[in-house]
Length: 330
Image 1 (tube, helix red, strand yellow):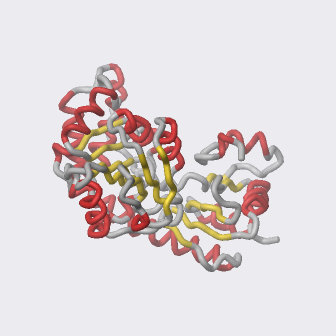
Image 2 (cartoon, helix red, strand yellow):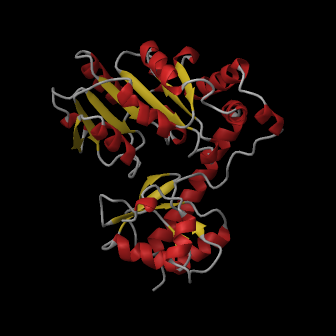
């Protein structure tokens, strides 16, 4: 698979690979909310000044409100991707288990750090030799949810041997009841959050780490001064404070997901799973189905670990839904 396709969102590359595909392209590859949060009253003059401590605190307070977390346990960062990449410089485990399938960067960074990395199919499969367990909740590809009670038992077990449970909650805004953020700051627990998926603002590069004091302090040193832009802090303050928008968006995404399920069912994919931002289908040949959709100007997500599954995001409008239906027609 071409490296640039691994994370989705490479619409410019798709145009080069499939130059005859109809325009406009419909990008369903990222699992990002197609109806982004509409920020109001943003002042570009903020970009002429360095981010202030007050702006940081206001964004952090809003995040803590949405997360249900203690404010002092939240560290605001420039997206969860960078936070993930810095974690091996903050803790130094020898053996890392990653619940599969997971966001690919997790395995990459721990392998590069010289750790023994093991993929596991169940968090209950973790051996006593494991120092760190990494999992995505909801699941990165299948949307599988683990309850806070289940994860708390895992955290407690790891913490007793000075280990860590790292929970990537990139999609947790869809299912806040399953989040471990309210327990953030507990020994042996690191929670990662992202504003990109649910709020539809991946370009803002805004995320958070919720962790004990020593982890936050070490991460602050590594991030350096002003890691989050003034504009991103302003966006975060507005978006995370707007609980009404969040509630209505969950309902809207649920309705759109049901429409997508009907399209997939009519196309013969009856066992779709995932979250309300994307569905995962099983197909005899992911490459053939992916290419067929691409030739019709529809970009969906392939995975390097399977040739039998594709991830499909929400079509943004009725026209896109119609094109997706037609693309599945032989």
